[in-house]
Amino acid sequence: MTNAEINTLQSDAISLLKDLIATPSFSKEENDTAELIIEFFKKHEIPHARVGNNVYAKNKHYDPSKQSILLNSHHDTVRPNKNYTVDPFTPIEKDGKLFGLGSNDAGGCLVSLMAVFLYFYPQEKLKHNVVFAASAEEEISGVNGIELVLPYLGQIDFGIVGEPTKLEMAVAERGLMVIDCLAQGRAGHAARNEGENALYKAMDDIEWVRNYRFDKVSDLLGESRMTVTIIETENKQHNVVPSQCKFVIDVRVNELYTFDEILDALKNNLKSQFKPRTTRMKSTSISLDHPLVKAGLALGRGYYGSPTTSDKALMPFPALKMGPGDSARSHTADEFIYLDEIRNGIDLYINLLNGFI
Image (cartoon, rainbow, N blue to C red):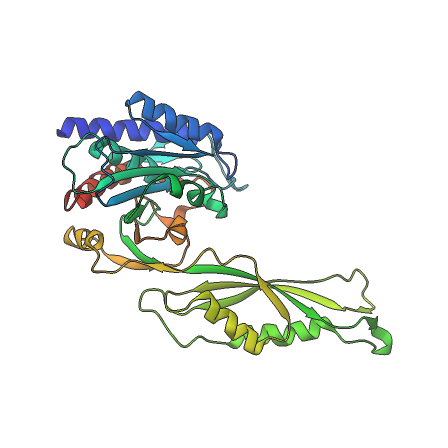
């Protein structure tokens, strides 16, 4: 492609992002943005398919005998918080920024990867297939998002997950496990010092969680951490000793621990009953020796371990999390992305893949 054609790709991507911002797409409610993505592919005469609210496409000369790379980002958003000073669904350009809900997380990444897919789509004799997927329900780690569409994509060998990383390479990210706990006691009258106070039993376990440290510390992600974030009893009366106390542990796991190892530590130390809500969001990493990472290093990109989770956690293959925008802006009021971040993102993605694709 010529520079003029790449400029057109960049302009088309920004125009699509404005349309996406203007179209509400809360998790599980992404039908309309899925249609916008489909219309974009139709405009560019690219065959595509839809599964639920996920949209995917494969390069023109897709060859099942070749390895495939997945380009993925999500088109759902969180709900706008109450501190917006502008309409979250009105795309506003000002001072080189594009304001709007989902502009930074992860609309800029999504449209940049779509532009990159268009760049590679018609090319012959690629060493790898290029597959694109716009996924739903990422913000809630829903089961009808990337997990739903992956079986339709064919064999995927590695991927790029578009999330705002300042175009640096997130080569690892923490896993997330939420654990529901229940301390059991026996009800009684507080004035007569009766019963067994389940709240006190829970406090003993919470104190252990607060002070426990996992030995293995990751160079990329630091410690695995547990934090108690919710506690409640069924009591509505001040004078009743609670027979049950529920609490919730938020566990952030580095790549050196499995969820089973975390659960074993709890089993050996907690007196309360406990059960993980899900073990799907595992910690992930991609080797620094992977060709994709090496290509990024050759372009002067840095790497780090990400404290946040993404659809990367649900992919059974190595994936690099990388994209335009800044994670610190995600889910904030008056969310925005710099237009140059999108342009630079498209250029960087193309240069990254040109190295070996």
